[in-house]
Each structure stands twice: as C-alpha cells, then as structure tokens.
Length: 528
Image 1 (tube, rainbow, N blue to C red):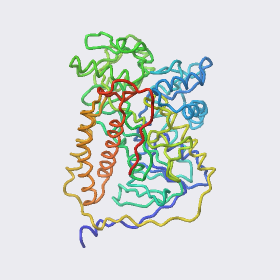
Image 2: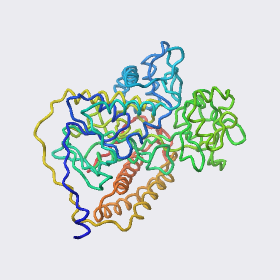
Image 3: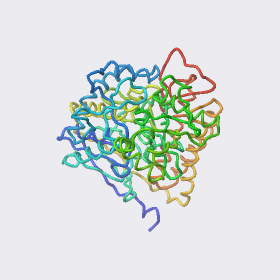
Image 4: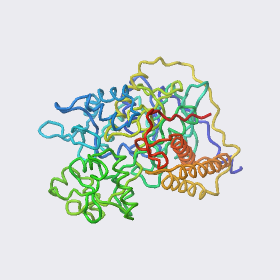
C-alpha cells in the first residue's frame, strides 16, 4: 500500500443546524443564546479555554453607576475611535451593556462588589468608572462559567482539537466548512445551515504579542478567501504594558493598574507620559504605546517601568492577585518594585465586515467578536469594550438566527481530496516561514511605520505567499500549515491596508503621512 493511500482521508460528514468556529466568549455566548431546538457544533482548535477571552484581565465596560450615562460611554468610544467609529453600532453596544452583565451573572459570573455595589474601575479613554471586573481575572471567570453552561445543553456538541481549513461556499452562500481533526489528522466536512466565525484576532502575526498561540487570524483569512469584505486591518492595537522578562511570554499587565494610579517611569524613576498627553497614563492605548516606544528607541532602553508600589501590599494583592502572583514568580514584588514593561501586539480592531446581527456579505455566514468588524472600535479600541462587543453582538447574532427560517435541502460537496499530495519531509520550512513573517511584521509594520518599511514588508510577504501556496499544493495538510497559510494571508491584508491609508490615524502611524486626513474613511480589502 502506498504512503499516500495510508493517509487517505476517510469520508466523514457532520450535519448541524449551526456551526460555530471558535470557543471564546463570542462563540460560547452565541451557542448559549441559540434555540435549544437547533443542533450546534462548537469548534475549538485547541483546548476550549485556550484563547484570548480566557486571559482577559481587565473587565467589561458598562454604564452601571448612577452618575454615568449611555451618551458619555458612546462619546468616549467614538473619540477613541478617531473619526472611524460607527455611531449606530456603538450605541447598540453601549445600550446592550447592562443586559450583557446580567447575562453573564445568570451564567454564574460573580463580579467584584463592595457592599452589593459593583466595584467599577477606570481605564484609558473612559471619563467615568465603568469597568466591571472579577478581580484581575475577568476573562477566566467568564469563560469557565460559560463553558459550564454550555456543557448542560444537549443540543450543543463540542469538537476539541479541530481546526478549520476553509469555508464551504456555493453561489455566494456558506454551507459550513472543511475542518481538520487534529486527533486523526483527517479533514472532515461540517455541513451547516448557518455558520458563525468567532475565531478571534490576528495578533500572532507579530513577533511579540500578549495573545495566546491561537490568535493566527484563521477566521479572517478564511473569510477573505471566501469573498468577504475585510475592513480596517491596518489598525492593530499594541498593548502598552506587557511584562518584560525572558520567561514571561509577554504576560499582560492590565491597564487597570494605570486606572488605579500606576505611573509609567524611566529606569531613573522619572515619569514621562505628561510629555505626550494631558491625560498622562490614562491616555488611549495608541498614545501610551507610541510614547513608550519613543522613550525606548530614543534612549536605547530595553523597557520602561510601571510603578504601583506606593499602594499598600494588601491592597495590591486584593485588587491584582494574578498579576502580583505572576510577577512574584519571576522574582518581582510589585509592592516593593516597579514592573518592567514593553508594548506588544494585543488586539485586531479590523476584521470581517458585519452588521448589527453579525451578518457578512455572504449568505448564512456570520462573524462575531474580535474576528468581526462592527465599527465600534474604528481606528482604536477603547479599553474593556472588547468583551462587551463579543457578548452584545453574539446575542444579537443568535437572535437573528433563531428568527430565521432553516431550509431542509442540503448541498452536496466533494470529499476532501489529498490523493495528489505527499507527507512533508521539510517541516522546517513551515517553522522558518512562520518566524520570518512575524519578524517582518514586528520590524516593518509595527507601532511606527513608513512607506519604505511597508513596501519592503509587502514585497517579502508576497514572495512568502507564493512559497506557502506551493507547499500547500504539494504536501499533506497539518495544523501548523493551516495556521501558516492563514498567518501570511492576514499579514498581507494588514500590510496592504496600511499602504492604502495615506494618513496617520488612531493606531496607524506613518512617518511619511504624519497628519490626519479631513475625510475619514474605512479601508476595505476584498479578494479579486
């Protein structure tokens, strides 16, 4: 028997009413909000809880204080969005925030309170205290409680260790996806009447990131190949403060530390944020990240420092237990010493164009969460609006599907054919290209950009795309190859979007176009 025959994919077909690709907050909320009369497949390419939602520290922004109001939250969000925020979508999200908090509490999330009142903190861009949180491990609490709720539903089936390859598209309608079973290394067909992309962002396109390894832009790349509109991918948010330590793997230091008075300082102890913005440490993240980047480059520093040591140790351990414990594990007692920090790629503000119900321009295909572009973030995301967006738009998406008419006739699709490919004996190529892409993006498409850097990145990424396409045609598919294919495509979209924007706005700063245009417009990329 030939080696190719040994690896032949068996014909495995699954049929569900709804296919959800991704198990972060947006994916889990979508599944829970769907009618229990619908069969639902939840696809997780790693462990269900291994995603950005789980590691979110800060919290969820919502108007919960009597002195706060919706208009203020909307205006703060639109100001941070630098002229590209969608006002209708922003109002929809903000007005849905209190119900989003209640939905999470109904799933078992216990937000931090003082005397039965929400303990609300503030973060960059907010004019009021409106960030509800569970100490400094909000994402972990949300994800574990949502997953517990999902496991009680008989209509939802979880597929762990499955990674989507491509969407099944016919006549501009989506019918599910080809998905690699990582356990058997076989590609299986998941046929569905409705498909939801909830795969998260693409910060893993950069060498240094606060995100887990799952954030490789899979949903965005698949949607691009299927013909979706991809919007504003030039706006990658760099979190200003990730722990600088060789073994920390860019552990995130929550913005809530700055919200509680933490000061950014140089190695000699001097504060510097006042030189860049009147809001100092509470300026939006793009301003803070650029300020840190500028101080590091102009002075040759490896990092700057975030100091909260003026607070009592017990207070710090109560409010930031996870951060205190993590830093202590690396020999840093944040109650006595400042924390070494650097910026790292954190959040993808662009994504798959979708409306208030999560609908894309392809029939029966939806996008929610960080993979989607609803317009609420514009050119820059305001802190703690991301988990909020996941919940509000996932609920709306599920409601739309619940009210839709499901058809009974299923489309036929060919089985996955790997009869003309061979097992790879050059897997080092995949790892090498993966590393090169991320270094190109960090060095040439980072916090501060220029035409020369962007054009070089485009030139090299176009070459890598050709190499990846050839490799994909010749060899058996693998999880690493799927992610590499998505990574290079997403990187290309980011670079092409950045080249198309001939101004500096929000998270996109180009030295050759330092000024902001008077006519703000979205960047839309679509496969030709």
